[in-house]
Image (cartoon, rainbow, N blue to C red; front, side, top):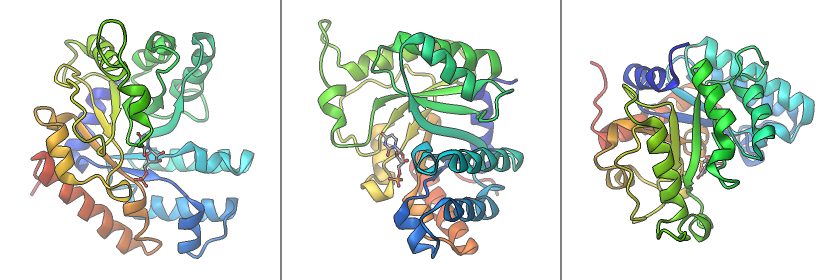
Length: 281
Ligand SMILES: O=c1ccn([C@@H]2O[C@H](COP(=O)(O)O)[C@@H](O)[C@H]2O)c(=O)[nH]1
């Protein structure tokens, strides 16, 4: 399969630079008039698919909200992933997997092997057992055209205590991860398939993102306080590689299909403006 980086670049050209999170929070289920159970999650996801699957570039189901309902949740996640992909969207599963290498190999097989039921285009991964432990994911992604987004500077306020800590060479933990991913993406065109998660809420983090040559997944917009202006400021010089992600801000407009479409369009327009990527006329 064509590498994920190339597929993502095309999807963002064709549908615009936006990832919509599929996060069936219990509060959203309630607001949508749905029960806080597996049937509610199934109905929620079907509405997201019906409203947005044919127009948004990337969807990011949050695994936690499906895991709450055990086997039924897994079934709903599987079916949602399939429907989103059939509608031409890319699916990035937010599961933040990470472990010792031999276990990471099983996660890679579960999510990045096209013959598995939970196959997705890309996953999020945690590097905090050492970036090298994620090598089986990177290998599987390279073999099957998948993507891996590695946590670097997360959007939550607790992140900096770990990510800004400095090692013996003086670099922060985050900068070490950024530099290692930059090495792995070096020379790949149009863009590498190994991405980084960098929140829109990180403020002035003082990290060098200039050599990454891979996509940035940017959560934290809207509900967590990040703005389109933050995108412009944090990613100056790398705007073409930015994939902003929004969950509650878009989903809060549901369950009306047209309202969901309008909310996604508004968010996309703000991202296009901030990133200097006008839409096709
Ligand atoms: O640093 C991170 C990494 C992942 N997330 C996830 O993104 C969404 C954000 O949801 P919003 O409703 O748009 O705030 C959620 O699934 C998080 O688990 C993140 O927020 N920050």
